[in-house]
Length: 159
Image (cartoon, rainbow, N blue to C red):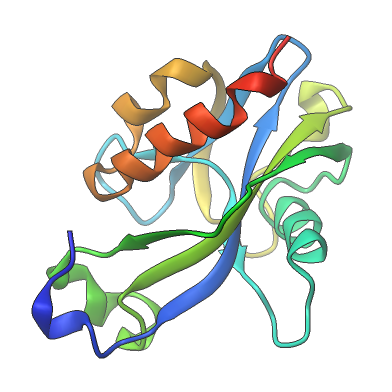
């Protein structure tokens, strides 16, 4: 849903990662700055001059302290989502209306103990593996349609 007063603001370019374990469960984590039961997959902004694939590996390492993963699929298109109007001034200095993201499905090649969300700049308070189909039920409402679309796009990668 686009809010008319936000259309002048650009989207922040970023990536998202659907990290799948050996049992085709998806990694989700709870944001440290959210009081609600909102979980999300790893995501982050693309640095100037950085390739989206490079960003995906960097963000996974920054947010989970592991790079034991390989890209198994890339979204055909870029996905966008709009922030709720009340959040715009509070996120990214109010410079963006939402994000435009390239998404990657990645296969986790490590073991659970390789994942550590207590990073130098932690973003998450806890993490877990979930069934792909439950993603829309546990995400913040403004990202629900995005997560549903990602399930449709990446469903083919699960065994």
